[in-house]
Image (cartoon, rainbow, N blue to C red):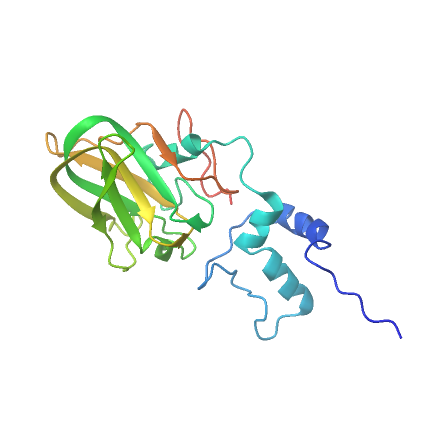
Length: 228
């Protein structure tokens, strides 16, 4: 008697590619980044369970990989381009301690930093374990702040995270997650002690730890937001 044939993840790749190409939406995150119609949800058909599993952020990343032709610097520019719309200005891969940073050009005393969270699709909680690091040379870093785990907002609610620095001097400002996950923010603004009204990060060179399939080039202006 023949045994039923089971499709392995390797054999499912062609199916995954078709599903990925037909979907342009980033799935809402649950406890582990699973889509809303999670595999194993009550009442879900077998087809729905398979689609939910393979259309999860991990499944799509495996199928399509990072955005082609987009560098980390081009994607990172989206968080200091002056565009605040409640969506993501940059988007790293799911990795250990992902980070984004901006180069202010020279060492100078800083007054405060405003961090505008992503507000769409219930993704704001991913930034709850945020750490703020400062550096004079981009090599040696010191911790200036660690968030307490509470979800903070952005431009949509008018409640970005405000971090006072009280004159601490630095050239590089880095936002990093503790542990593993995706890092994506709307905008990061840095204000100096000399002029508390001037955003020192605006239009400055930025970089990040990786790119993802949701990354986009923001070189020369704001890139396409909300396309995924």
